[in-house]
Structure formats: structure tokens, C-alpha cells
Length: 194
Image (cartoon, rainbow, N blue to C red; front, side, top):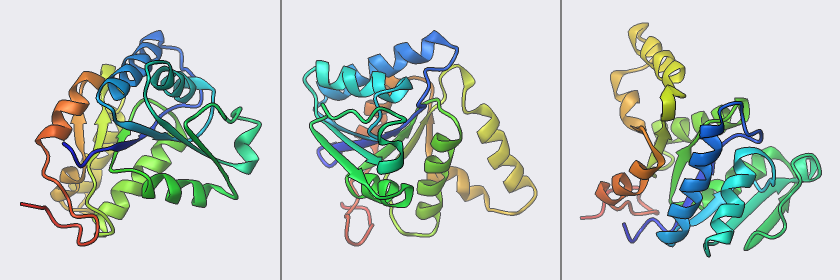
């Protein structure tokens, strides 16, 4: 897994009602720091994203935060990150997060998390990248999304291979072991390296 040096994590700007999700954000932050994988995230100091980022830093890890100007105050941009960027808009934020990351993980979140996750899945489907995408389906959080994908397939708006564009794990502890099993991807050709 030497090729996975940075991981973009999409997650909620609110903590949610299930305190278990806060605990998994903390646990995942500890794991990223221990594995020396840089966190790339949306730059806020609120919700699950704030818990995750502060845990990575407190555990001795590295964090790259990227936030658009209009959210810098609303989401309390976390300037204590190792690297902190304020960009002009959401499109620039998402592109910069993509460019700084070797893989993507979706934790629980809302519409923004869903938007970012769907975008990297769509880009992969279009052949724009071949980076790993992992959904952490803790407590069945992503089950409605998976059912929607299955409905797309059943209604023949997409092929069954769409489910192969991303991986699903049950816990944050499963993420790094899964990444270690995946083949290395050439960032230029997007092909698997032997």
C-alpha cells in the first residue's frame, strides 16, 4: 500500500444523532495517523469532519484541509491543519481534494458527502481516474444508497459493473487492510501496475 499516502475522506459537517458515528470518526483519525496516511478533507472544524481532522493531528498525523471562501466562516475553517487552503468555490475545492488524494473514503454524512462521493464514482465510471473508493457502511448507513444503485441496475440505466467502481466495508478498521489488497495504479495512465 506504499502508493496510498493520502486519503480523501468525505463526511458530515454535523455530528449526527448517533454518537457511534463520532466514535468512528475518532477511531479512523487514529488509524490514519498510525498508518502515516495524510488526511485530505473539506477543511471545516465542525461535525464529523472536525472530529476526524483534530484526531489525526492530535495523534501525530498530517492533514490537508481545503475549504471554499463562502464556507470558511460557516464551517469554521480549521487553520491548524498541516496544510490549509481557502479556494474560490465548491468546484475548485472538490478538484483540489481529488488532486491531493490517492483514494477516497465516505463516512456518514449528508447531501454534500453524497455529492462528493457520487462525483468521484462518476469520474471513475467515465475513465477519468482509477483511484480506490470505499464506503464505510457502519450500522448500515449507506444501505439506502446501495439500494438506489441496485435500482439503477435493475432498471437498466447502468450496468452491473457500476457496483465494481467502489468497495463497501462495515467498519473503519476494514479500510486500510482493504487498501493494502488493491493493486497500485499508475496516476498518468490510470492502469494497474504489475
